[in-house]
Image (spheres, rainbow, N blue to C red):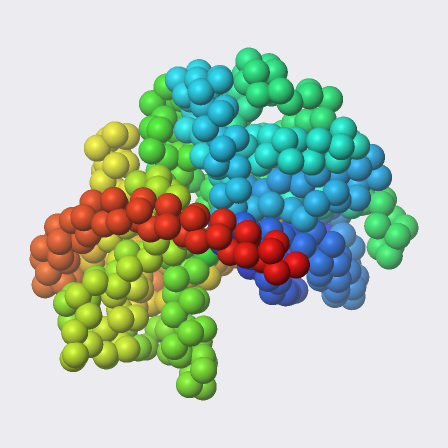
Length: 511
């Protein structure tokens, strides 16, 4: 029996699985990895560690497939965004730098003033933010390591690095290049108007390919000799859009480290600057993402710091909040653990518990985390409804966080929407496989691929009249919390910066 293998590399773990021609996802394997935090504001990825774990999972799934059939193709999904700096042999000149990284703030400000914010948005349909749009990180590398920049053969992102390991080619698909800050999302090409003004050499940029294109044949020595095509694939949320069959003016939620509301559009002029906008896998369609950076990470942080040390398994994450009540006993939580994207776009913002009192319980604080993340999601949903005029009564919810039923219940009541929890939550793996299937002729077209398999809704979480009313009132209070702390966050960031400089000087003196 023929199978396609899909690889999905997220910000905290790697999933590899295979589907057969009926679209049944099998042999799913997972391996966690850790991001690197050298110091405050810096977030890196050990590329070789990620590759070795990815390769091991790929070979393990491959062996399982061979017990029942053969592998027809491989496809890739990775998180956005990251920067890698590679030699002609594909070796890394620096650790990978992720979208969470803030080291390129000065470069971001310089690009904005040199190129112009309006021109950047006109071409890329995005604002420019440090790390988030990777031109800023590339310029940082050029400024701080000029000799290494000269030695660098190609710059790219994590998918560029992995795809070179698989095929020997340096490429980036257009869902990923959309987030570089120098890609024209309507013309589907690198923008000379941006990269030339930023001082970036065109020959150091990878070729941009369609997500469903065949990049090359697998060159992995450990794999069987039979030639197997490798398909470019796409960014993880874009892959999920394919797996869910999301059409124009439809929306879904993905819940992992981040929590994102995504809509599909056919008019690039309507795209909102408060969102992250990219080319869809399907040409002449665009995806508009309302991303919160750290909801899933905030839940994980709470578990690691306050629940795991007491011996609780992760099942507690679906149970503990039920020991509190809507409103979490008066406790509110801002889920901005290391800055935030939509809707505030403030890299200085941080997580906050507000309203703690002597009767506050651990359950209250955990419920406040879930509610704060849900309130932030409602802010994004309201932008979608007002700017895009998209009014729906419910939407699919996918990702690891979607399995937390109490959190889903809270979100349903906060947003007053039905949440459709899908049978297959690993939709990035599935979507990558569907792109490969369309490329090698398994499906009639990429647009119809999702309709030719099954991914049923396993349950629907519906809003409840009483909690909806309660959360409407609490939401108004939540909306006052960030504005009241905005100046504090800015002052705190300045104080942190000064403290770090003093620490650096003291360290140099000691040395």
